[in-house]
Image (tube, rainbow, N blue to C red; front, side):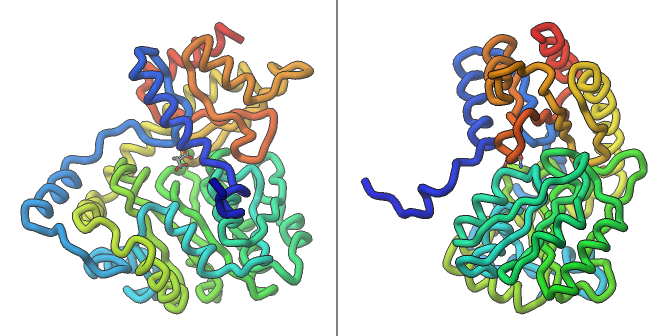
Length: 376
Ligand code: GLU
């Protein structure tokens, strides 16, 4: 069978692959502690489930507007000063939002600057658009603004930031985000800001969207998600906030790609927006507590920077690798010998590291780290 060249040029998502592998191992009776998948353990809040069920019972099972339900778009636009419905597109998770952005905004040969390490799908989605990912290494997980500016060429189209960051959990200081925004403005580029973890910020850190920066609105495309924020990963609801012409281009693409996002899932998302601050605060304080437990262990075992966002640690595991062992080997050993799944740093473009998701029940978190401690 002959496949298109573009499909040969990309790797399957390792985070998704791990999820499937772990499910399979569990079905086979293995008792696995899952530090691999980025998914909060909390059940989907009852009001979201009820609104989805009501929508189904009320027959809201038909096609809807391609860019999203009007009520949902209006509520989402309200999160951004000066934006309205024409600036919002609802898509199947932030993953599809990002895919469509690169398809709609990049021509073959265009370059997208991506700080490294990076979430698995960024590089492959850029390649699928025929564009070239240009990686700029972070420094101690923080943006290298100078390096980003140096990486700009006549073919640069987009600078992509993901704040709070997957896989490192880093939260970027506002001054750095503003500096990148200045670079974007000066070189007439676009800043794509992946804010899937916007709710997950600890130690009273703040994480403002670049959409709030003066004069950047015409250069800024924000991607957010309901998945993690409201523990509704399977609903597949994410959204883009962007200048209206970008939304029109994305809608044109989406009209041929999937049409609207599942109508009753959008009704569930609408109910999520009514949950209010206390829901978010409870989740934040629980995850900050788990971050502290996880960091305490990881700091003893590895070289680990304490993250202030998302729900990942990304320690340097070199001390346990020796001459020939890679992080992939270490991850395979942990899974095989003690049934703990982690994602090797190679998936995120970085050797000698592993990603640990700590968004799981406290007893599993502790048991997982005890197993790792013992085997190492
Ligand atoms: N984004 C999550 C992760 O990094 C979920 C899996 C995926 O879509 O990549 O684990």
